[in-house]
Image 1: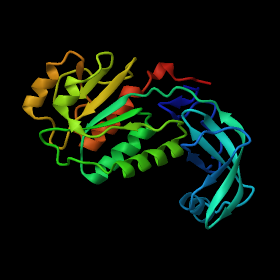
Image 2: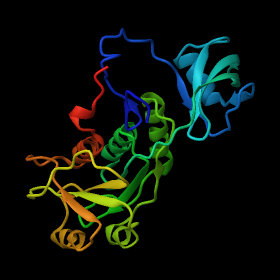
Image 3: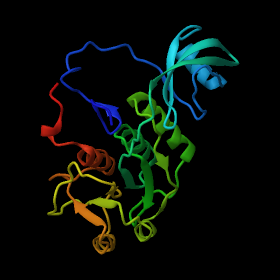
Amino acid sequence: MRAGFVAGCPVMTASNRFSSARAPSIRLHMDHALRGGEHLTLDTARAHYLGTVMRRGVGDALSLFNATDGEWRAVIERIDRKGATLSLTEQIRSPVPEEGPWLVFALLKRTNTELVVQKATELGVSRLIPVMTTRTNAERINAARLEAIAVEAAEQCERLSIPVLQAPQPLPALLRDWPEDRRLYAAIERSDVAHARGVAGPSALLTGPEGGFAEQELVMLRSHAHVIPVSLGRTVLRAETAAIAGLALLTAPPVSDMPLE
């Protein structure tokens, strides 16, 4: 993780705290391999975004990135209604590991699930795992839409990787197959347990549905040695708020560890 970044996104440091805001740059995630001197073709949708929405034309620069090849500067060589052609000129950032926590969250209504995916991506999550609980009021996801939301969030927050989105599964199945080397911090409301804050090593956060976990699910969670109950504070949070706040707490470094200059 490079200086000035937490969970894959920029944070305020003493060196940039008072700097003037720079003009928004365009970053596009690419599944294709990125190599210097290569020419890439964009489809009509992305060409429309560049030319019509962002008002970019021939000669303008942008960034292309992926987790394997890092981030590259590209220049528009051609752009029209049929597509666009870009040439890669130089590497801006080398690929770096972005081993963020996993988020296990009970499925919510569509809008709230989309919000959780967007904000979890911004907070550096490396894997998104929807689960079905007793009180879950949804059973399926629009994977293509959620993946598109994750890509857009990664483009905005300057991370290189896109979190893996798993298919929904029942909570008991998730616990049965959970990897022993990764701690699962379960956000339990109205409980007298330690607060989640700046954990080290492979970790994951589990948040419940609207209405919270059922009593039998709480018993099941406590029966697993790798599950660690944590508190997110004294107030009862909405399910989507719990996911966002819990991740922020889980990934936050101690204040004393923040660079001063």
